[in-house]
Image (cartoon, rainbow over all chains, first blue to last red; front, side, top):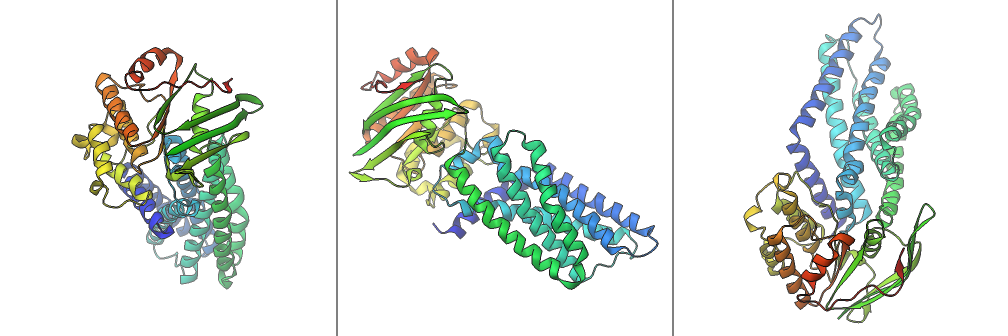
Length: 216
Length: 216
């Protein structure tokens, strides 16, 4: 079977499971709406239009989401034991990784858009994101999805994953966030972020390969 | 004709020797019972054979019709002592998912799969959510999951634990069918259950105990 076929089967399974976990999705949606509302209301009291601060706050929301996405990725499969049944099938490590990455991208990007939409709505027109900012936030979501999947794979190896995973996400996202926020206007940040996401993709795929030979 | 060969298999965990120089050679059709108290390395050995753990020393070779098998995952089916299936999916969805990952489409079109589902008594539960089933029925679904790709070597970790008499009889019936299909079946048993398991197995087996090497 082709890698695309494997990714499709794995991704559809994850999507079906997420769809049935309506409570989790509902709570995440409320979280994104609430953070959007807070960002919107806070921006009303700004003396000047501090767009970079707004971006920073949305990235903070994405950070929380990436910790959650990390738990839902490989760690959840490990804790339920189903990682072993996946590793026993003749699928490629790349398929396993990309299906999990796709789910993280879908989750983080959807919730980021909800958060951005409600921050614009509750700001009373004070937040006016340009197309560069919207694309930039989506690129940051892509980057954090890669970081989230990476930390999830790392979490498979360690007992204290509850502490380590948020720490790994925070440490890996800080430099990118600072660079992204400071260079948002000239698109350099976006290009770097997308390149970094692909680099993480390669690292994680090789890590999944390691998990497949020593998953205990 | 299938052959499984274990040569000088040893495994250390954090400096502690769990398996010491285990040698085993099995030709099909054959059932092998690995017995021992908790912590004696039964599960470790069976996981090494499955390919989930790498041995510290030694190697495993599998031959089908005289040819050495390179990708073990395609010909090994592994059943853990806890079910490795998705609670959020129905029994049929679980079977379809794992069959799909093994390159099988239209699952119910295969006579082999239909006979396994039938032998395990799963037909009436195909549309039930797996999470709503009792431990025993989940275990049966897990056995179906492990056999879905018609493996030549079947590894079962404490398969009779948690099964009632009807479940045991179904499993024995299934073992009989698998032996007639020229399979190698390896199962483990905790020390307390050995007599009961041996009594069950001796009804139709040529018992072979692990004499070469030792489980530390």
